[in-house]
Amino acid sequence: MWSAEHGWIGVAFRVIAAAGFVYLMLPILMMFPLSLEQGSLLRFPPSSISLRWYSEYFSGREWMASTLLSFKVAVGAAGIATLVGTLAAVGLARASEAVRNVCSLILLSPILLPTVVVAIAIYGVYASLRLVGSPFGLILAHAVLTTPFVILNVSAAVAALPRALEEAAMSLGAGPAATLAQVTIPLIWRGIAAGAVFAFLVSFDEVVIAMFLSGTQAVTLPKRMLDGIFYEMTPILAAISVMLVLMNVALAVLGLVLARPRRP
Image (cartoon, rainbow, N blue to C red):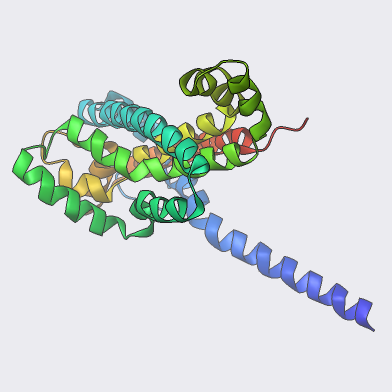
């Protein structure tokens, strides 16, 4: 009796999981046919199949400028976040439990608070420093938002690192800096790389902070897409969305592979 009931419960969970997957994926998959519409209006099914809007994107000067800016900002933010997040994760692993808990709460607060709260706080500082509309300002703001993702990935890698290896290096005369550079980092590089990948993804796709800080001079691709929703709802937005989905999926898979613990 129990085995039969257990079997039905398993089937029910699978059906619910499949329904949830379809519910989440269907809007994303809809972007693919919508991006192939020949006309200027989003229409499903497409009246005719065309790659017109992909061509419009690659030939559009403003779209290309925003895309290049997003890549520059994401690379810069990921670089800063990777450096700061790695050092913070290693430091937290060596701290006492009380210090680690307090510092972790502070360092992870950018992802615990609503993004709009973080954006308003940064805007208040940037307005007085005249950094609104500055690519450098966007890089620093995105670094604040993405550093917690690096900390989480590197902390997991450090937790799996045998402490005896570092102690052996120090017993042989290596100082803390040499041990970090020659022992710790080479052993946790996968976690560092995974954190950098996810930091890049979060920065590239971020739009809330960009709404406050982009101004008119530093408009990122997500911000320009948001403006397009209000002013020119054409299939070019679907075409860009398709390319972003493919890029995000590829990088997310790479990040998950890197974050997976290495088997001995």
